[in-house]
Structures are given as structure tokens and as C-alpha cells.
Length: 250
Image 1 (cartoon, rainbow, N blue to C red):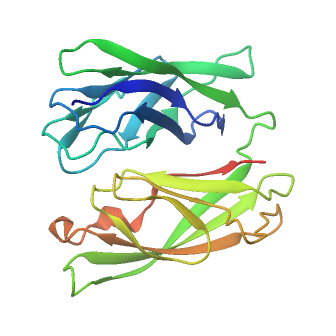
Image 2: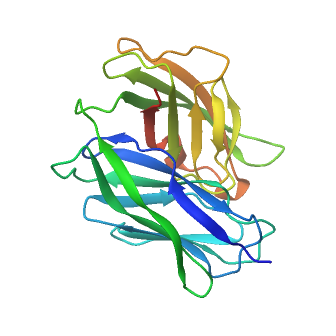
Image 3: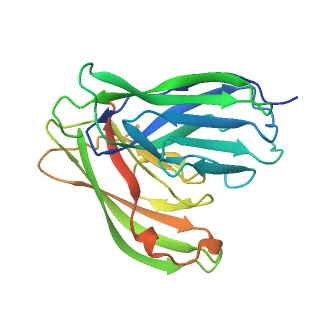
């Protein structure tokens, strides 16, 4: 039996500002059966945003992003033992925000089966930040790196620093993307891991059993180490975390 996609829907509408990066979460509801090669999840963007990354498994699929970032797709290239991962992401750069409504659409995501027949999809919806600032100001500092002798990969160490732009925030998440498939979290201090990096995206959120308030006057540090696959080797670009952004879940 092949994969059947029942629904694809956006999971969360994030606040954005012009020129900012944003990672949009979406859910693929399927029968979890293996996918037939040629099936794909495709994004088509308007003039307001560009795709920088889509989550995808490094084995059995390939990611394509057009030169202008207006179209992108993850295509199944080999019979897989399972269907699409339920929790998926698409990362964007927001070039400008149209005047008018608080929420606005920047494109669509749709599923196409191996015969090219269009299936379920959704409108990519973003929300204008009322303050003109991201609710959470985020930055990362690279610390050091070393080779992991067991895997022969490389561990890079960072500190993510989060600060509220105005009011304190109790419930939040932070994500970054554009990681090579097969990257894993070697260690992280206290946040709950939602996405572990294996499909190119890391997402962390407030732990259920703790109160980690993000305040406007001090930065909350999150220490994290990533293990990059051995075949990637040492790379200068790994000293930076891409599409890093924090989101208010209150």
C-alpha cells in the first residue's frame, strides 16, 4: 500500500517583520505508508517572501530550491520504509509586508503524488508584528568545535541568547535550519527538543517542568552542541546558525 495524504495544514502562524527570517511549521497527516518515488511536497511563493530551506530526510529524497527562492520542493527519490514525517517545516525570508490585514498569505504548499496529481495543501500565512519588532530577539555565539572520534563527525558548540523585545514571555520556542541532513544534537542544556536536526531543522521549546522566562532586560542563554556528519568535514559555515528565530507561544 502506498502513502495516502489526508491533510497538510499549517501548525502555527508566526509574527514577522520585514527582512526577517521565519520558519513555518506544518503537519502532514497520512497513513504512514511508504512513499512512491516522484511524489513531492512543493511550495510556490508570492513576491513577498523567498524559500531558504525545507525539512527533508537526507536519504530517499532531494530538496530543490529555485535560484530566486520562489519555488521549492522535496521529492521522494527511493522507496522508503515509512511515509512523510508528520512534523515538517519551511523556512522563509520575508522581503516585505503588504499593507492591510494583520495576517497575510505569502504562498502555498501542496502535495503531488508520483503521477503529478495535486493533493492537499495550505496557504502559508504569516502575521504582522504589532510592535514592528520580533517578540523575541535572538542571536547565537559560536564557541568551539572538535572532531568526534567515535563517529568521525564534527561537534560545533554554540550559545543561543534570547531576549524579549517588550513584555516578558513565558511560553516560547526557538528554531534554526539549513543544516545538512543527518546532523544531530550532541547535547543541549534544558529546553525540550521538538525537531532534532536530522531533517535540517532544530526546534527547541520551553520545558514542561520549568519556568524559563524571557525578559526584555537580560538575555536567556541556551547552550547547544551539534554533531555534523563525517562527510561534511570541517566547514566555516558551521560557525553560524541560519534562520535563527524565537517565537512567542503565549
